[in-house]
Image (cartoon, rainbow, N blue to C red):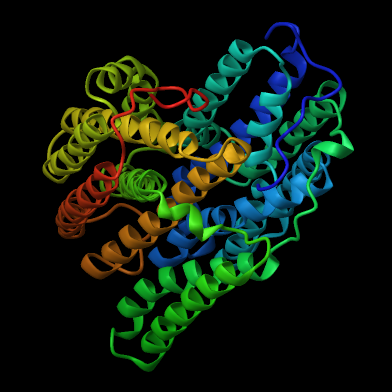
Amino acid sequence: MTGTPVLAPSRTYSSLRAAWIPLAALCLAFFVEMVDNTLLSIALPTIGRELGGDTTSLQWITGAYSLTFGGLLLTAGSIADRFGRRRVLQIGLGLFGLISLAVLLVGNTGELIALRALLGIAAAAMAPITNSLVFRLFDDEKLRMRAITLMMVVGMSGLVLGPLLGGTMLAHLPWQWLLLVNAPIALIAAAGVHFGVPADAPDGLTKDRLDLPGAALSILTIGLACYLLTSGIQNGWTSPITLAVGVGAVIALMLFVLREWRAAAPMLDLSLFRSGTVRGAAIAQIGTSVAMAGVMFALILHFQYAWGWSPLQAGLANLPLIATMILATPLTEWLVRRFGHRVACLIGAGMLATGLGLMAWAVEQAYLAIALAMVVMTAGLRTVMTICAVALVGAMPENRTSMGAAMNDTAQELGASIGTAVVGTLIAALVTVILPVGAWGPALVASFFHGEQVVFAVLAVAVGIIAGIGAFSLTDARTVDEHEAPA
């Protein structure tokens, strides 16, 4: 979101309590779009049985949302800066609710994948705008900081609470309700935004041109790159279709870069990546999301297929992720204040890689071993995520901090798409493409455990390297708030 800085609205609040209606509405909107990243993952085995989906289709049910969501975040921010942030958010909430209702018409996995892609588009019109609007509710800097911190906690909690909430609902309702519930939530959030958030002042909007070709090319590039993995397993790495997809991905990437360099108002200003901090933080954020999405996708199959747990039990099994994500804040702050961004992020990357390595060992052990691996991995993940978000936004020009937030979200969604695609592809290659209906036999369970060990070992090395490279580009700043000036 480039151009004119956000101006103060005509109505601001003197306390968080006085702003509870708009604040609750914005938090609710942010929560539902974050929850939808992971909510449906818990239902993948159920969906696979009812709709006859294979491993590839299941990975795209989760990946399609992240793909369109991440690809359109920056474009949605540009649209909001031009036509009004509150207006675009309300449109996004309305579309999110209506599209969710269409799940009643879904009859196969292809239709569900298309529905999830459309939901990602609607969610992209919500994510960067909710953070921007909550900042504008207050004139007082301390209140702004508290509100932004609240939004960060809500967003991260939404990501990890998705499987638990989904498992609880699946214990009593059909899987379609996981999407149907979006409609009333979106309606409540839209009403709160309408009555509590002031409209944008005309002089607070920009005249930037929309970079629709850039958005289309970014989605095409990411989509072809992710499908390249699937095609390599299904059709062979030297097959004509796989080679064509690979060439298409390279051409799309080249066209995207060329477009963004030449566009008067690019979707992604590539000159920003001349900053080592911006470049490193974005790279490390991709690594964290690859890890989180890959682990959650694999463990959902592990708990429900290999161990035969119910969706509710599988959701409850993610509690160590949720608890550590929330409780690791003091550890992150201590590391940053003691060592600075670069060293603290390297320590976090080390914990993340160690946790993934432990997960490779734990999959053949009891649940307690997996829970321990979750805690170590999530503590590192939380540290890297927080430091990189702060560093990326802090490295942006003063009138482009919202662009920094959108870039941070985009890097995380890109990582989520890659993580789901990589893990799904490896499991299909190492174990099975078609997931059997009913209880798994000992031979298939043993094969799945072996496949998981390979997957988590690969993730440990890859994510450790990616996050480590990103961490080396950071500075020794010791800030822990996204809107606090770097030291």
